[in-house]
Amino acid sequence: MTIDDLDSRLLVTMRAHPRIGLTELARLLGVARGTVQARVEKLTARGVIADFGPTVTPEGIGYPILAFVSLQIAQGRLAEAVQALQSLPEILEVYGTSGQADLLCRVVARSTPDLQEIIARILTSPAVQRTDTTIALSVQVPYRIEPLLHAAPDT
Image (tube, rainbow, N blue to C red; front, side):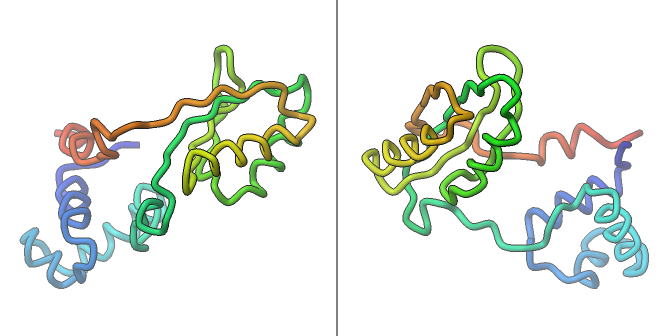
């Protein structure tokens, strides 16, 4: 599935103005309000637009430490490991990976001792054999989608 130029402009504008209404969005794009509404509904149904909620930063709610923890899982115990990880609120995301590690977790913590405690809780699961942790020191390129939106439209 691809997006066209209007979809791209609509998404870029919505990202730049997250609280914008459909009428204002239509005015800025120079198209009918009904067109904007139909496009937003289509993009939402296709899963292109994932949500309309506010973006909450972990550091803004007291979790300034970001780490990436890779896990090696015992053979045949992936589901058990994932279930254990879901019980830890500090684990924001978990990805299945190829290579040395089986899972890659994005983890936040209040401090480095707190991170050590979180890793210890991860290791209480018998499904987890080993962890390897990398602490992020700074963000060099923040999450971005706009360059991809500009490059993606069919022409």
